Amino acid sequence: MTDIEIAQSATLLPITKIAESLKINPDVIEQYGKFKAKLPLNLIDQKQLKKNKLILVTAISPTPAGEGKTTISIGLALGLNKIGKQAIAVLREPSLGPVFGMKGGAAGGGYSQVLPMEDINLHFTGDFAAIEKAHNLLSALIDNNIQSKSRNLGLDPRTIAWKRVMDMNDRSLRQIIIGLGGTGNGIPREASFDITAASEVMAIICLAESMSDLKRRLGNIFIGFTMDKKPVHARDLNAAGAMAILLRDAIKPNLVQTTEGTPAILHGGPFANLAQGTNSVIATKMGLSLAPFVVTEAGFGADLGAEKFLNIKCQSAEIAPSAVVLVATVKALKYHGGAPLATLKEENKRSLENGFSNLEKHISNIQKFGLPVVVAINRFPTDTSDELSAIAIHCAKINVESAICNVWAEGGQGAIELAQKVGELVANSQPDFKPLYKWNEPVRDKIRKIATEIYGADDIEFSSEALKNLRTITELGLDELPICMAKTQYSFSDDPKLLGRPFDFTIHIRAIEIAAGAGFLVPLTGEMMRMPGLPAIPAAEGMDIDENGRITGLA
Image 1 (cartoon, rainbow, N blue to C red):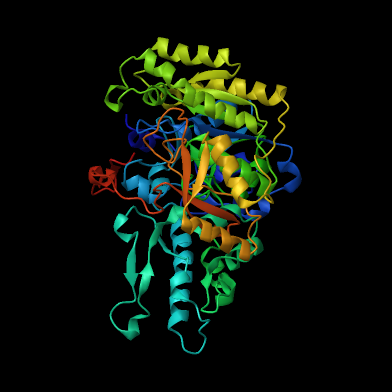
Image 2: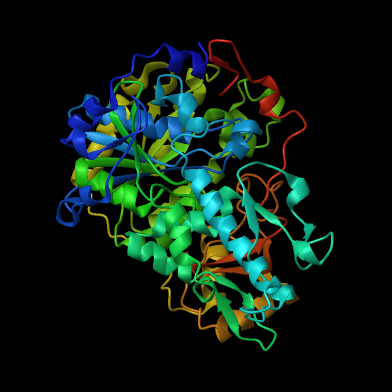
């Protein structure tokens, strides 16, 4: 069966039963129908969460073939439960852009899914809509202030850094003109849209730890400068309170269940190639308050999501994983080893071995942070025994544990070996987590460390605009913010065509955006766009719904 057919055939437990399995009184949850609910923030126990174990799931550099990182994350949580270690998965929410574009949904796959799959992949509990509305409220307040005669702050429209957002891939909105049609329609100026997953409000809600912290961060959002060069923030427009009102429910994590009826928490959804790529601090801490083992994931490859998880989220929230799981597949390694996409189902040991360099670089990057790592080999039906064995043998040669997983077809049973090795790793190793850089280092040095040590670049090159941005950052006193690189997910470099483990390349920084509310700086590398476009044949074209409300084509 397809993912959606498997999801539709599952028998779901009432969400009250899922809450009870975590020793949560059903009366305190806020139900959204029978099978999903919001969790109150007071369930976070600061003392208890320090006793429990956090497992981070990341991956090698992604490919068009797909690696199944979310599927492995869910399967690992199921596998840990099967061997007697109570675990829950704490994951991100899907964005509608990829769902209707090319990537598809983000609720796992096969018998390793979070349910109800259709709800999660579509509007879910409305978190993305609330984030979008809060973001665009600030946009409206900015343009209203420019138009106002009585309360005008003197904003220079040419310096406004705040964009609008929409949770859909639409390249036509990357650069627009607003305010046309006469004086009653506002002041004409250039503007643009980002996708909601790249919104600073999304980043803020995923780093905030309380409502008061949320409002503080919203108020710190940098908007632009006045005509006399004074900085303007959202607090100057008295925007934080109203924005927080729109986010009053969105700040609460969502409780759902897996295909095997175990609890899962979903919250937030920043992309890892444009933002920090991890679920919320609130959700992670809530998970650690409720279960001995928490499995979470960081988006795309370890050079993006995991790097940001460890350098930004962990330092901000004062948490650290006990172990890291690195997902790899036969097809992805062959692709990084030079095999054409159309041939990935064919056995090709040479390309597979050539792709090991990508795997090794990601492993060494994780080890830079002082963390133990195990490789999860996500099995696909077309993989041969020789290919799977070759990966396991190579991991053994470099003294890294590995486990072949078949969670798509078998659910938690297909992750027993991985769960056992993760359990052993946590029990027998002493993680010595150390970030790659200190936040108070110079901005250039922080960017250079990520580019040279994580990506393997020879050098970095700043455009004239990026150099101007650096001066502005210094003038605003924001030098001590961490770095959230915007980079293609397909390569260690900023060129998506340089696969495997490239050498002799330069990372090009074309601009640096300020996310003062979120509390980080965003260097834009290469040709990265914060508003994706749809592919030639969008996934939306294959979707439908019948008279009984049954959805087809959603993956």
